[in-house]
Each structure stands twice: as structure tokens, then as C-alpha cells.
Length: 83
Image 1 (cartoon, helix red, strand yellow):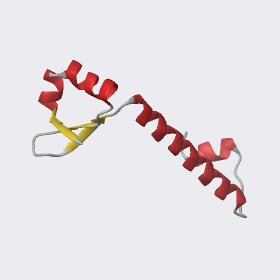
Image 2 (cartoon, rainbow, N blue to C red):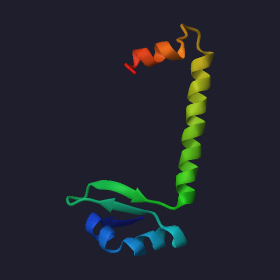
Image 3 (tube, rainbow, N blue to C red):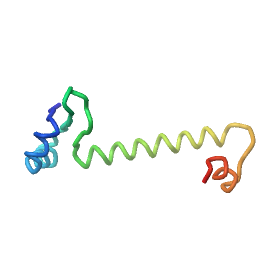
Image 4 (tube, helix red, strand yellow):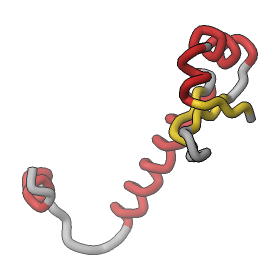
């Protein structure tokens, strides 16, 4: 996986996007000190990640619905969150 400093990514932004979108590269952008701060990935990778998150959310909801216990109305749930 390619790693670029934030400065390199900024100075070569168009090239960075081209590498990702046309060559399918995944690029990690890091800060001074080597701490990773972001990744630039092809749209296909992002869409796959979003589908996976949706699937996991669905499975979590199904497990929660299958558990016996007290149910909350939407209004009560929002109130418990302070919304």
C-alpha cells in the first residue's frame, strides 16, 4: 500500500486521485511522526465497505429483535439518548 505525507498528497493531489481512480491504488495519508490520518480508496472499495456496514447493521438489528426483553417506542428511545 502506498503511503504519502499530507504535504505530498496535497502537492500531487490530481496525480493521487488518478492513481486511485484509474489504477485502483489505495493510498494512506499520514502526518508528521508517521501517524495515519486518512486513506484515499477507489469508489468500488468504498461501496463495498458501505454494503458490508449495512449487512452488519442488519444482522445486529435482527439479533436485537430476536432477544426477549423490553421494547422502547421511537420517542422513548430518542429520549434515552437526550434527543
